[in-house]
Amino acid sequence: MKKILGTSLLLFGLAAFGQSKEDSIQFRKISTEILNNGKGYNELRELTKTIGHRLSGSEAYEKSVQWAAQKLRDAGADKVWLQDVMIPVWVRGKESLHIRTSAGNWKSIKMLSLGNSEGTGGKDVSGEIIMVKSLEEYDKLPAEKVKDKIVFFNYSFDQGNVQTFISYRDASPYRRTTASLTAKKGGKFAIIRSLSSALDDVPHTGSMRYDENISKVPAITIGNTSADELEALLKNQKVTAKLNSNCGMKGEKLSHSVIGEITGKKDQSVIVVGGHLDSWDVGEGAHDDGAGIVQSIEVLRTFKKLGIGNNHTIRAVCFANEENGTKGGKQYGKVAKDNNEKHIFAIESDAGGFSPRGISLEMDEPQKNQIKSWVHLFLPYGVYNFEGKYSGSDIAPLHEMGVPTAELVPDPQRYFDIHHTEEDTFEKVSRRELLLGSAVMTQLIYMIDKNW
Image (tube, rainbow, N blue to C red; front, side, top):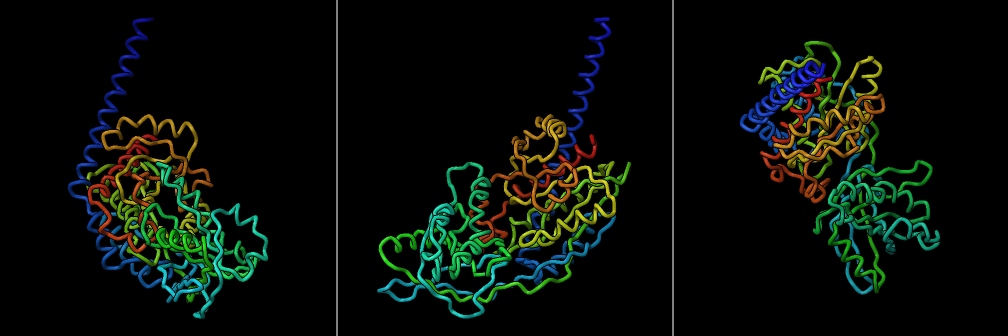
């Protein structure tokens, strides 16, 4: 009996070793193909330089829809279609901010209105600035101290976290909520310090939201250097701000997410890989999230080019309206549910086109453990971190339906230097880093398709 048991264990071990070797060879084929022949970098150049930034509802976004559909066809997708999505339309318009001390002249300050903010209707709105360093400090201010003032929320991005997304999540309530908090106490508008890891004067925009039961006042952001200078001025003198802006919501319109797929050979259950096609209306939307779009398209292209016979349908989704509404992801989840589609896995790339360092897993422990058992296959590609638990806003509706979800985790150190700014341009993207991210997502989907 012992001899039989020992022989069985040996055969199992040899089979497992052989399987691991086969997977390692396939991983190498995938990375070699993408690093040598991948088209994602050139496609990102085309998207950013010929179309540019792509705010939902803009003419540029509609051009990007047609661009993405063609690229999915070129990649070899068996089927490509547009999914109807009703999206909010927000327009920035002309805007300016000036400050002055009691003894000085008006000085222009570089700024951006936050996305979805209402403006001043093209009129000057001015008042004295008061500064708080935290929401807790603001909560303690009586309403009479805020009434008719401009509130400067000077909360700094925490530079101490190695994982910069922790700092971003910590600071994001200042962007999202402070306009309504200001209005609730009678303030005229809110200024926030940008959610930025860079020590420069580049303002970072991003989405904010209003409490619908409170009047809507503008919310704007300034860069770190301006924030430091304003803080220094406020320590010993009165400072007045003057805002003139034309931004605001312009209703809704019909737009589209773009979807392409390779049909499964065994069944029609779906594996999703995706990113969001829209961007903010500054910069070129290269890292956020042109990178995720071209990486997702590259996955389909590589499966077709290498002739990897996929058991399940592999679907690339270019989601609409992630930045200021997440309507594309919500609509995709609704349609999937209404059509009773079976999704077995979804991964999103929406953290930049930097070198991949991990895969964040939002799923049950047995599924996590199975993916973690593949870590030895990913280590040669610099991917080691499988401890994250967040998987992205566009695929959150799928996760709520019980689908295991994940997100590519690139190196995070530079992302919040340029996130939601004029600095997010094609020139900030490395070809090899971008394509290596495509390779890692393709490798993971190969393993999921083979084993689930």
